Image 1 (cartoon, rainbow, N blue to C red):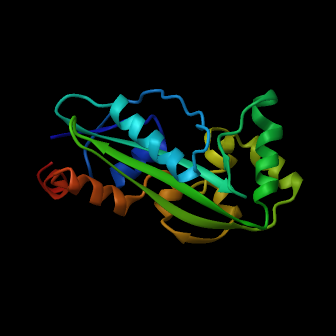
Image 2: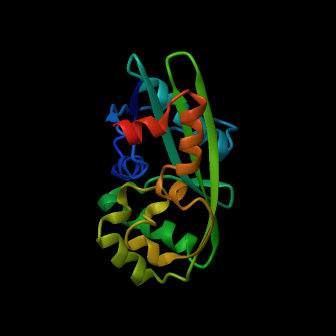
Image 3: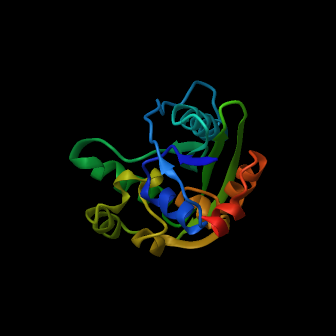
Length: 196
């Protein structure tokens, strides 16, 4: 059976490749607006499910995922706005500075009939980040397309003092949960790895 990733994220592609799986990409845009009364966990799971269904190709199992950063029960999406999101990006980093926040990744798999999903949570504690450092980090361009305005797998990792939970979920695709989800949808991942 074909494996399809419904995401344009280079980080998710790298993580699936790290798992030794062969896949194709069929990224689809879905509305990422938060619905009224929706919890952050419900939000990422709904988006992951919507992406898996939207990216589905006949005869495949399609994976959808969505990651968000949550602090004070508020979802921090990708920075946007004037000047390429500079103010919003710096504000996000300052808000995360010296504190713990949660990173939630929704994961879904769809085989044309069954839609399986889960949410993986990790807690990240940031070191103290001053405004000048936040601006310099923003100038690298790295945080612009990432929830919470930072990428833990790149330069942004200098801010993460401590992580409890799945590192790969913080990057964008929880490896252990992805393996379990694919098995649940009858994908023989070891045959993909060994037989190619």
